[in-house]
Image (cartoon, rainbow, N blue to C red; front, side, top):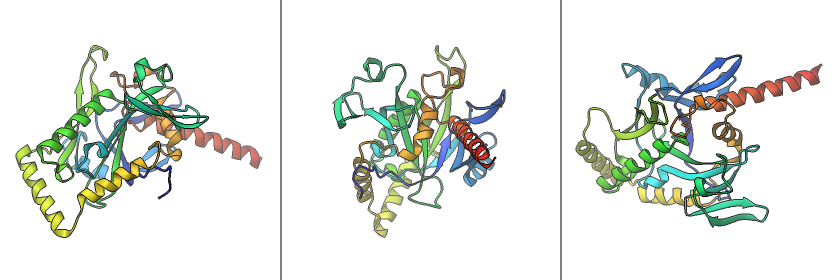
Length: 305
């Protein structure tokens, strides 16, 4: 295993909340009240839709506001990683990641471990440079039992709600979180900061039409079948923990441009979530990509001339 490289769950797609609209000749993100499931491939128009996006939408009577999921790990903190994060606005590389008590900060002398007072009290992260950043990995369908879809967010509401639900479900199921049949749900609420307009965040619950007791019973049956087949869930959790711990920062270099666009969008604050966070809309990334592709095309055109 390469030292210094965080080994994260294999990702085969993305879960986003939003869409791209064109205004005044520019592609900008717009909040949505439904999920969108995409592949990891994007073009000038944005991220390409995953086949599951259409199949799940056909199974509903309206918008995709619930996604049936399972989790890779029994440990809630392996499925949802959330920290206060500060990124370099030029490269997208993480420069400081903390949990409110301690942080790892990249400096001239390497990675230092320092106290983390949280963004509001941190001089280093002032000006909105440091934000809560959560990554949730879920399994959708059974095509790839170790390949996950990732939902990224800087929304306090989504991070706080998902963290609570994951720990609660792990507790009531006797630690069988990876076997529970659950679903991601999109919820809306209004706050004073949202000026009575609805804001949307991600929640987690048992699947529609089922009860918690039935979900736990199904989880126990699945766990028994897995053990009989030789499936070692504890070893999987241990391997995942070692993989995350192998690097100082989870975010990879190749995702730098996407991070910059998601954390520090140039669009107006009207396109942000009013709760002070920003759920992964898929918009800023596509907008940034289009600009970079247009710039590259212009340079190549100039050379050809």
